[in-house]
Image 1 (cartoon, one colour):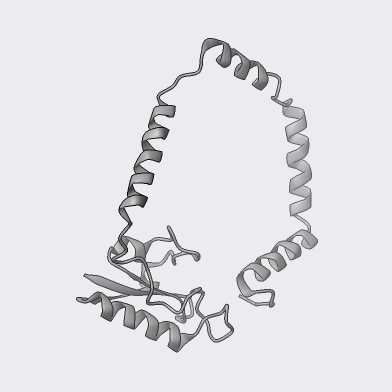
Image 2 (cartoon, rainbow, N blue to C red; image 1 turned 30 degrees about the vertical axis):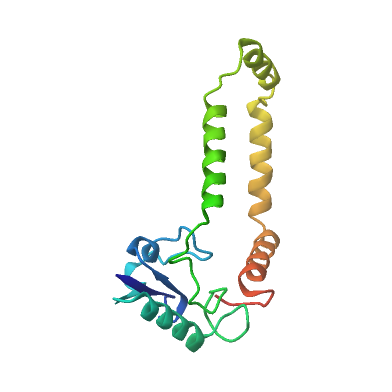
Length: 171
């Protein structure tokens, strides 16, 4: 089975459209550029027997609702959909390189540092702990800074720039 899914804002408008073969992807934020809604009622899932149908539906929804990054709509998708990695096959040379790299890493992980090396590491790390009074002072300073309206305004503006491409938003 293949699936297309829409993630909805609280007001019911979609903010992300995707296609998957495992429902886990539709229900979690992992490997996405945006966060999955916490409320499962704000996730719409549609099943498809054929992958080409799922890809076509994904392209349709992205075209219909438009993308924020291109200024054509409300979706946070960064592509027009329909590409994905389904059916992608690695070349045999690439598989061989990946295998060799993994074997090399396993050999390195099997090595244990000598007693001298362990003592040097321990010596370099000793004395790096700071007194509790210094940590408490830093924490108090950060709490004071974070409690100011100027700090909150600065954080909100930075988030708006990241999410909305520099434009102000009331969301």
